[in-house]
Image: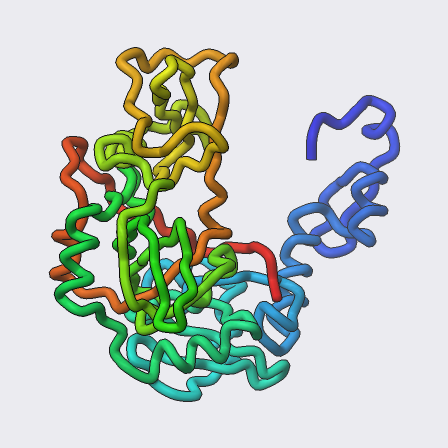
Length: 318
């Protein structure tokens, strides 16, 4: 609530619910309630409103569905009354809100519910309809390129990601592309250019993919401040660039990704140019997670920490 000025103290009101004194400005903002009672009232109002996060105003893209963590968030307790199971999928299951009929996906662990964007319902059906695996010949190519490891915080632990060049069975070339074997279906909002691996005819190395040692270095970068885990790299002519967090690609008009090396000096200064490949826009070919495919990952030296788990996430909603 912040510091209460002397003038505000001279004009106090009593909360209509608990009777505690509260500054008049807060009293008016909360319709006669103190901040604590106003928060309780908002929670009760939310719990009394039927529906899922898509129709009750919360707009979560995922939330805890079951387990001990769910008990810590009482505002989530109403959702099992209104979101019902529709069918089992290849992994996990499909659910639907009885009020707005929006689709939800309960993950393979049965612990987290994920919003299914309306424009992903068709590809979700195709993803679940059959196994999505690559031939041994194509897997050999991916093994030669190497999958980029998860970062030291455990992000991307549930996906095996390889940057490459893909030609589809229809003859369309995507360069660069990402092949991703993952536990979740292709429903995540940030993945914008989605395909399934059964569309793939050939896979080759991409000139936009960073060398293996650079990708490993980015995966081992520590977070020096919030949202910033830098890796300083060097181009052949001596120019330094900064990559942030785990990076697969380097797209530059005159510099080839294969020529990039990790800089001997990791000292960062503001004159270093930042490079971002905007990997969310890169064509991503989704396949089934298989434990044995973890062997595709490049070797690292730094131990990985447990994967972070967000109890509730919000983001763009379709």
